[in-house]
Image 1 (tube, rainbow, N blue to C red):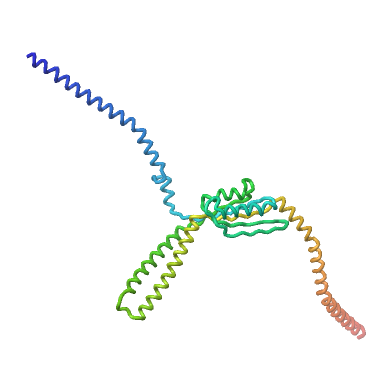
Image 2 (tube, rainbow, N blue to C red):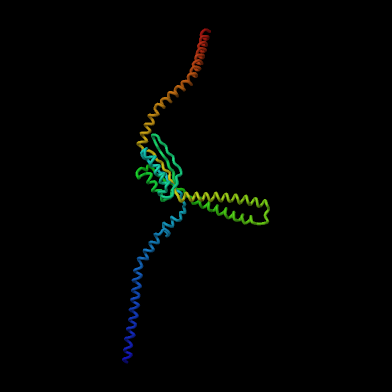
Length: 287
């Protein structure tokens, strides 16, 4: 009996120990889940805000555009600074100071109203620094940007290249046949040469499209300030005053030279008409 009584408490203590272990494991599991819940929520929020998530990023990716950007910048500054500023921008582009850049054209004029224009093509990351160099902050009078979507043109050109390559490969395979006649061989050669020419033109067009997409065009226009432009216009008008007067006098002389013979002929005809009319009246009065 004593042994039985001793076994009963042991069994009860073992059961209680198992229950305590299970309770501890459950509490630990709940603690871990509550600990990682904010991390999971933050991770979900980060995934929702990621560019590839099904939000604004996917809507942006669905646009499927390939844009070719063109910038137009008008800078107003004093006339004596135009040449130096134009050269500074040109040198920065030539030296690739802000990235790969090429000068496409430059025009410059002097006189009382000097001006200059510069057109460059540069990588996107160099656009803003180069514009800042040209305008020096507050000297940009006008600025505009426009973009052309080349997605359709690129797609069509890619499909054209694929079609030409497939046709070129088929013709080359057909050309290797031994049972072809000489006329067929010549026809195939002409067609293969024509396809190669078209393929080369399509590849050049694709390179040009890629160039327009990967770089941006900037057209700079340098002009004098509004006050200097107004004063130069007044000075120009004063300089042209004598020429305008001389032109008007010359016009009047030419007009007089043209009207003088007409006036003489017209006056003679009028004198003849009046003389005949008076003679007719005298005859009527005498009759």
